[in-house]
Length: 84
Image (cartoon, rainbow, N blue to C red; front, side):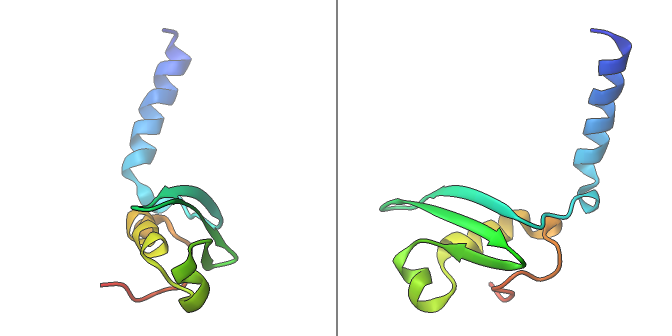
């Protein structure tokens, strides 16, 4: 392995530990729920999910789970902001 790639690996390790360097502004994911797979996305600071629950309430377990997973790297306060 050449020295330039070793330097990049070391820098990547450092960056991975400094999560405040990353601000996610948009995001798409396939979320495997208990019953189906759902398309979940973060667009313009708001969560979207194609599950039935989200369609009626603008929040669901899939969006709340991803918000928890990505917490430190989300830009601003994407909706929903309150999850316990």
